[in-house]
Picture (cartoon, rainbow, N blue to C red):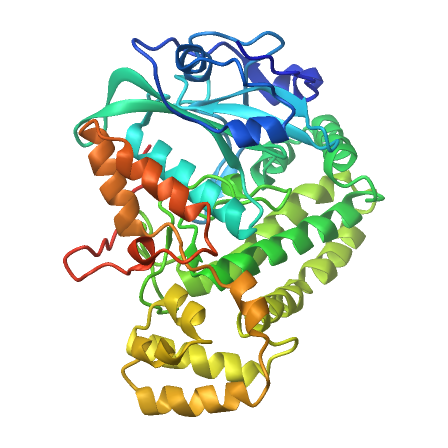
Amino acid sequence: MIHIPFDNSYAALPDRFYARQPAVRVAAPALIKFNHDLARDLGIDSSGLTDAEAAALFSGNATPEGADPLAQAYAGHQFGGWSPQLGDGRALLLGEVIAPDGTRHDIQLKGSGRTPFSRSGDGRAWLGPVLREYLMSEAMHAIGVPTTRALAAVRTGETVQRETALPGAVLTRTAASHIRVGTFQFFAARGDRDALQTLTDYTIARHFPKAGGPADLLEQVMQRQADLVAKWMGLGFIHGVMNTDNVSVTGETIDYGPCAMMDSYHPDTVFSTIDQQGRYAYSNQPKLAHWNIAQFATSLVPLMPDQAAAIDRFTAIINRFPDLFAAAQHAIFSAKLGLENADPQLIDDLLALMAQDGADFTNSFAALPRDDARDQFIDRTGFDAWKSRWLDQNPDTAQMARTNPQVIPRLHRIEAAIQAAVAGDDAPFHAMLAAVTQPFTANETFARPPTTDEKVARTFCGT
């Protein structure tokens, strides 16, 4: 059996922060994967855990000792439109653990059944989004991007109805917390200043102990968002649904819905079927992060004694976001080129060549130190001229090897793994997981971009 040393603090907040309830039982849970390495890092001894026990616990059929399951309340701007009440419509926070390194982590079930926040949803997840999030989040962690993590994936033995009947599943994920920009918006919009103050104090104590108040909190959250989105940009990652309810104040990547990493590079790339206007296109992510931070700032204004002065002060803070982001992104792309401080024009010219030729984003950077890098380009004369300028800067190729992944969770591979799992074969999922969690190790099979027939142009949210 397994012992999870819960130490729950969010459950001690006032009742209006959440709705307590157990998970809804499922018919026939079966374990797909349990992340023993992550469990060890969290201080959880899983050495005696059987697959049947794991399936029962992480499907929601059994509640582990010390858990206090609850669905969190939050609001949010979804594609720019305001939704005053969202909340965990298909997720339950089981509780928190304090890892051996002293950090606190949430453990949450996703796909665990209806809650008071489900609205018209069924509260369930189907197998595809569960496997996608497992692969994406563990790959991001291995590359070094702040992210939620996947602790377990379990089949439910039931079907869920989307466009068709699909196999159900539950994901167990961990996070520094699940406090979102939308959590602050929820209470600010209700004029609940007491709850907003409680949330702010809690967030500062848990995540930003050096923050002296709302203004400091805003600055630190903003810096983490700038750093995070710069890392996304350096990977060609497109989140796909950067709504304020999907923005963690801790600066972790959260809610891997219609996300993808680009193969052929173009700054206007969009994958999500629900993003009809390209609001969350690759190139728009920095300015949408800025917009989201502005909404966070707005939610903090009611806490300030002089709100007019606070608006001026907060505006001055958030107006620094573009410079913070530009500095973070420049550092990322300089490192990708093996340079300490690359000429911005050198970076821009390479990206322009890549966009012009539809060069593979990941493989172009990974191949730069090699003679075959020019094979990524149609305009090889243009690339040769660029490479000559780059080599004149004496790039550190050892740094590049530590910065540029050889393997990413490519969309066509994810879709193939999902299709195989739906048919009952989990082997492609496990093979892909092994590859993407060793992202800096050469792997010809998983580094290969999709052929024309394999390309996947669209992703779906899964709800």
